[in-house]
Length: 159
Image (cartoon, rainbow, N blue to C red; front, side, top):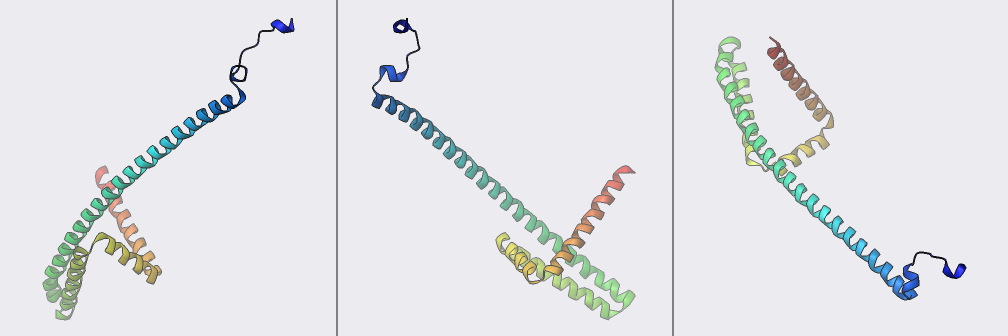
């Protein structure tokens, strides 16, 4: 009965040993090729999305820079306008301080408008490296002010 045992045929039964090895190599080579193609497609898509994100961030940064420049101009104008009232209430010396502050803010606004976003970021990095304590203090003050603005906005919505 061993002569008539039915067992499934395999590649080894039909193909010579070297042909079976070639078939396995072709199958694994095709799988590796498909895997490599899939990896490359993923890399290409990631590069594409990364480029799009970078462009969007740059656009937002440029818009933010323009808004900051405009806000600084308005602040400078407000300080300059208030200098006359300061003269009347506190004296000319304090009014001069207000005018100097307005001039300083105006110069800073021009610097912001005149620089590229990358240059501004490098300036900020340099400032943080030179004065980390001041940078932390400024960040804390800005965070506090932002929290107060958000809180007042939320309180205004309740009433």
